[in-house]
Amino acid sequence: MHQTINKSFIVLILLTIIGVALSNMPHSTAIVALIILIAAIKFITVGFQFMELKIANNFWKALLIGYAVLIGGIYLIFLN
Amino acid sequence: MSLTTQKSISNPPGGLLIWIVIYLELLTYGIALVGLAYYAATNRTEFHNDSLLLNRTIGGINTVLLLSSGFLIAKGVQFFKQNALQKTKQYFALAMLLGLGFLILKGYEYFEKIDSGISMDHSSFYIFYWLLTGFHWIHVLVGVVILFFIRRSIVIKEDKVNIMDIEAGAAFWHMCDLIWLFLFPILYLIL
Image: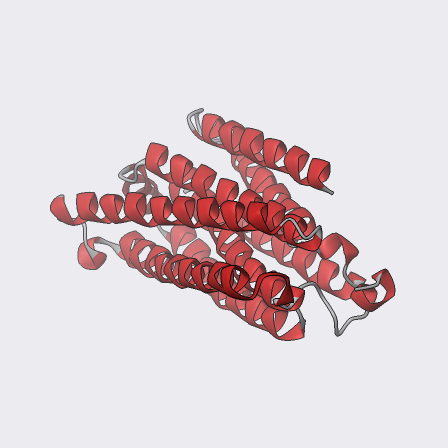
């Protein structure tokens, strides 16, 4: 369990750095989509690994994934 | 707690009540974020120019602070389950320090904005910025207080503290992470 948390943390930090680096590039649909995708992956990783939703009922997992997809999707639609 | 109990819909980690609170909070922020997306879409240039006035370095450092703090809390909860109480207390204390770091750095950013004359009436973007990040700042403050009391109960009662209470407090802290993980890219990076 400790190892999974350690690995998740490294991934989260790397994704944060990548997200900020991408934002310094000229904004295009692909860049915005990537930054939103990174945010959604980080969101789900914190929920599943740090909050231990991975061992919870599928209902709670689906709500969290659904939220990330919905917010990400709405931004992709509105900003493109 | 057995895996079968955890898998029950009425028994998520930390208990049902905290998850109802978490999803209600996420729903509230979600509605505000949809509102922001709608207004940003109707006035792209203004929102983009206002977003450029935000300090991405501070936003990025604050993201790392919150993620690191969440990481320490997740580790602390695991150590508690292994009855390593000394480590639990250390990790919770460090997590609180990082949380305080977030509050101070965000406070500095607010000071910088007010000093430059950028308050809530500056533009539509900044109405969203101040409201969304301001309420989030209050949540982080409440989270630090919750972590303080959880740690205190571990110091006083040691292993007699209910794991559900610790998981619920940790879940509230992670919720602050979750909210920020969308606030940061939306306000600072993509608009």
